[in-house]
Image (cartoon, rainbow, N blue to C red; front, side, top):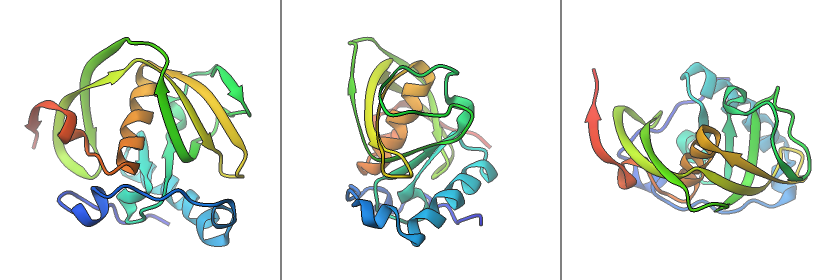
Length: 170
């Protein structure tokens, strides 16, 4: 089922840090049905990622389009099937290098607005998957950028707060 995407301005949803969820809630029918709906919504909107606040839920879940995943992911814990969309629950990241770069970003919650955002090029991510298994992996370049953007949503941060050279397209 395609869900409605919350658009900016909506500070009561989009700019509020989300709460971690516990394993029981993650494994509940409600959340297990929500995740495929988030994925379907992401594809319908032609997105590369979607965070729960973007569909009105202030919980720490994000989905990442499988097309952004590299074929080989350096895993520290658990497994990721790069042929499937990535579900991250309660994700956190930390840089693994000082290298960063500016690149253009947009957002499904801020239609037709783009800007350049500085992001780390190499990060380590710790999260649970949809089954509540711990996963820990390294992400680089565009994959790392997408994850940082989506986790920013979970922290109540929009790319326009970090970006420069913000512009609108018709």
